[in-house]
Amino acid sequence: MRVADQLRHINERINEACNRSGRSPEDVTIIAVTKYVSTEKAQEAVDAGITSLGENRDAELARKQDVITGNPDWHFIGSLQSRKVKSVVDRVSYIHSLDRLSLAKEIEKRASDKVRCFVQVNTSLEPSKHGMKTEEVISFIRELSGFTNISVEGLMTMAPLTDDKELIRACFRELRDLRGRVQGLNQANAPCRELSMGMSNDYEIAVEEGATFIRIGSSLVGNETGGVNK
Image 1 (cartoon, rainbow, N blue to C red):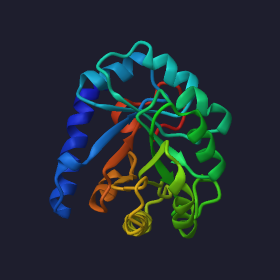
Image 2: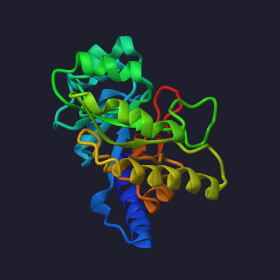
Image 3: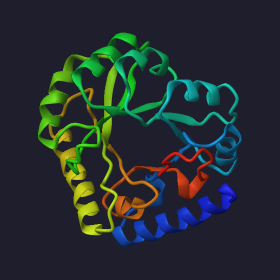
Image 4: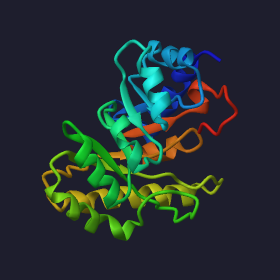
């Protein structure tokens, strides 16, 4: 599977989804989820035109960063343990999994400059998924008002793995509506312009509902280790 061919196909589907929803494809960034592929495959994605790579382990992030050329933006997309913050925080452009005050405090403490974060929201309410409940987010972001090293750039969610497209759409729509409420706070460190949502199986719906970052693994770069790379 050539990444360039897969990327061309994905971009065509993004364009179609944007046409259906009156959006511009330029407003959608693909994050290639490279956590289950080799450095060579990740480099192939960058060479094909991908500008953002997503990893979920600090060691693998550092390993790939040391050798991949092309200066992509690096996104930490997995659940982040507080003890791992110091090895991640100054290596990435975005953290997609801010979901508790203790983690925010550790980022604030360890960061050498402002960190662009997504607050992770469990819109599906599945126990297996990380993230805050929707009703907890506004008060959480208010608690962050005095943090100088955290910028809440947006919100992130994962829809359930299901064939029920309306259920998927409802999860994404809930996140979009929540973004509007966060923006209404007019909080300086929470511009909240972005929505990180949509993976290989549901990114077209996510684009239709306003996603600005979509996280695509298996349908773009494949899976070389047998892990679940959506």
